[in-house]
Structures are given as C-alpha cells and as structure tokens.
Length: 266
Image: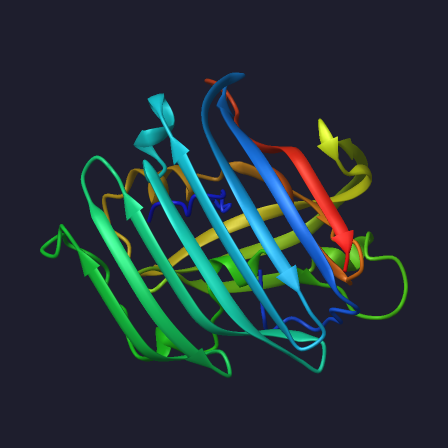
C-alpha cells in the first residue's frame, strides 16, 4: 500500500461511521511539508468545505528523494458526500497516483458505507496482491473522508474522546485499518493560520487486503512503529483534521506537518 498524497495524509496516512456532529459550516485550506530526518522531501495540500448537508474534500501532493521508497511519487484525490445525522457519509471518491513503478486511477461510488460501483486501472495489473473480497468493500470509508474526524456533543472537540476509534479505510484498491488511541493534548502553531490546542493520537496500522505482500510500506508500518497523528479543529464545525503525522524511526523520523492550516466558519 502506498500513501495518499496528503499523508494521508495520508499516511497519504478517519471514519464516516464514527459518531459525531458536523455542526455549522466551515472550510479548511492546509499545506504540509514532508520531511525525513529534518530534510524536506515533499509537499502536499488539502482543501475541505463542510456545509450543513454535504461536504467536499480534495488533496494533492508530491514526494521526492528517499520518501519515494514509501510514498506514491505524486497524485491527487477527491471525495464528496452527505452529512446525515451529524455523520459524514461518502458518496464518491476518485484518485490518480503516479509512482516509479506504477500509475493508478480509481473512481468509486458509495452508499451507506458500502462500495456500489468501482473502476480501478493500473499500469501493473499483474502485480501479486492480497485479494479484496466483497466483505472488504462493506462498512468502509474513503481515505479523504476518513481524515475528517467528527466529534459528538456540544463541548470542546479537543479531548480524550477525539481518538478512540478504528478507521476502516478502502481507497478502491487497498483495504486497511487505522486504530487511534489518545496520547496527549498539546499546543501547535502553523506558519500561517491555526495556533492552539490539538490532540495527539497513537496510530496502529493493520493491512487487510489489496496490498502487495512484499510492500515496503506495509512491512515498515507493521513493524511496530511509533506513529502519532495530531488533529486540530476546523472552525465552524465539530470536525478535526490532520495537523501532523509522525513516524518515529531510529534512522530519522518521517514527518508530515502543516505549514499552513487555515480554517474559517462560512
């Protein structure tokens, strides 16, 4: 599995099925710097618009240098959906990624958390992968919707409740889980935009299907890595979005961090 461009971000490195309330209307414009051992190796950006009944999100990015070993070289993704009873319910997802060894495009429609139609094309169709079953396409969320975290209630969105969930992600080709657990609350500050409290979640990655058994990223993430995802609020909503993703490595941490994190109530 290779990461979506935003780290998605991927880790491009969170769930539509999670309880929460996306109150009011808000917008996010964020840019991220990818680095290894403090050396910049890529950049990405995310845009999200949240209304009272629907939402739309898009991301694009590019990685270079050593990070290309783990992350797709460049790509773009987009997602749209409805907000029903405070939950983000994805309706469509599209992606195009270009790496050193593969180019892939995906178009997917969803309903109620299940994949209804999908078109996936790749320049490496014969690559050995763990088969994706019909069950793997049910009860899932696309990667972009996944990283808009709804928080229930009328109180503060920053708290221990922000992390306790498992995210069943399917990007049209690969199915994986991200389990989040609360670690701490800290203050963050972007070069432009948000400055304030954020919640830090520990992340456990589990590959389910669609990945190559010899994938460098799967082996890397499944090796007991210390992964942290830092989430910050989107103004005008009860949603959190990624501010920082860090993978601790003795040879040099991999970090995707917001240099701009501008949110506004509509």
